[in-house]
Amino acid sequence: MKPLKVALADDEPLARSRLGRLLREAGCDVAGELPDGQALLDFMQGPIELDALFLDIQMPGPSGLEVAAELPRAVPVIFVTAFAEHAVRAFETAALDYILKPIGADRLGQTLQRLRERQVPARSGADLHPHLPGAATRYPVKAGDGHVFLDLKRTTHFEVEEEVVWSWCGGQRHRTSWTTLAEVEQTFPKSGLLRVQRHLLLRPECVLGLRPIEGGRAAVRVADGVELEVSRTATPRLKELLGL
Image (cartoon, rainbow, N blue to C red; front, side, top):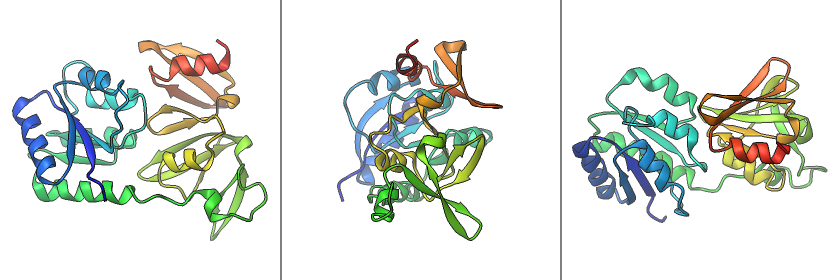
């Protein structure tokens, strides 16, 4: 298996240097060591492909949580911080892991093992049901002890929480068999799904209304009582797709 290619951001030089050293000693290819959140966002505008980002939470400029929400493409995020109270918000952003400082080699090794396990290609919904009519537009969700099949065209969005992907239809959410949004994208590569947050995939066709919110972001209504926030980086693309 090829080495994990990672980048990290931490405003504390000693902590940044130590994490970089630990990652290299664990066999990782460290592509970037950035001093703050904005530097990392600028770094991510390039064509580089990464297996993970390690982010401090409290940094000058955008915090690690804000950086995770504004990433231009999906990359697994691991938060590294001295403050345990940020854990809940971290996992709300679909973070892969949350490591408290000072970082130990054993604890870091557990996280890297999870990342390596994710490199094994997941079976898509179409792979699981190769002979099912309409497999390209339908997918299974759990219903009691069994499954029912939902049509993608009735789905407004997908969200991931703690490695469980939920689909939303008719204002209700349903548990799928996927563990990452990347698996959803691989199953429906030509469906036009748009990543509007790290943890949210939206079907633009289902948007009922859009309003601007602070920070250059937008809020979209997809069903009665269901409104989603769109990241600053995804807002221009969504508006373009909606003809705004």
